[in-house]
Length: 455
Image (cartoon, rainbow, N blue to C red):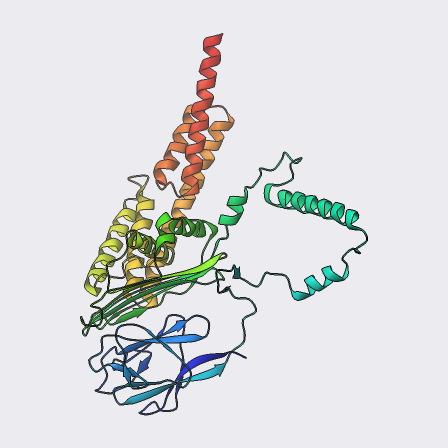
């Protein structure tokens, strides 16, 4: 059975302790904020980082430490080193060892088959299928019947495939679904993205990962400048979120990137700048890493879109701002939200504006790593405003429907216009529905006017 690798501390104050490397890595250093905290003067505050590499392997990278990280006596440069079982890692006066732990073999995982073959995702036929076909093959004496049978089977398989992809051609009640749409709707299985900027004084690391189960997780570190490490809770993404992600990677340049871009001076500058994206699709796996090098054309746009997409879903849009900036921004947004709430009867859109301001304030606190009590306090305000907005929406919508029922289209249009002003975001289905009703009313009035002119 395959073994998952772990880190065993062999010497020092933590001798005998074992550490499993989580999805977003395991950081070691002198600072108490590290996952493996060792009070050793030979260590930098943030010394090195262990990361997962595939399902079972792990790597180690030196975070521009003062005294270096050594694997089997060899000093690391800025490149990640893949570790094998029994490898020894020395940091300061501490020695760690790579050991194995029995792991449950996954029931299905995407793997690339070498030699340019297709990707095996565990969906292929088993050996028994071939054996069954062989046992039931026609005899040699019936070649004509065999040819006819093969033709009929081929036609039948083709017809079934057509119906599955395009729908029943005799069924006019359902729109046909093209093969391209069916393929794109579930093309991406998972992805991981990482950005690291480190030198002898600071480490900033941002990581986003979408699991094959559709759960998104973001984690970032900003040490020691801000001394905050905030891992928001994973969140299940929606179908619309997945559609946006598909569009990000539909960029034509994505397929042109090489697997690695590395600057020639990366080992001299005592700095680390790394961007890495790994995308798992049903038809293959592609990984691109850029280490201390200018990014290839289009790469920065893709990774920026990825960060924005993930941050919007989890509400951590302000992660690279300082603690003072986040605290100030949160207070200003909350104060502005309070003002909009107090003036909710002055302007139709003030309730929606209050929700937007409170949401920004909450996102700043989340990015800041604030305690749950402060974040919950803002959420209570958001819920209160949303409830009031929903009550007012239902009242206006009821009036609009009443005017429509009695044929007073001018009054109905005015009420739907109130909804559109009250909820200005086109992303809100209530806004889109109000717009649609206004269009229908305008069309109805135009038709009535045309009929009057013909008379």
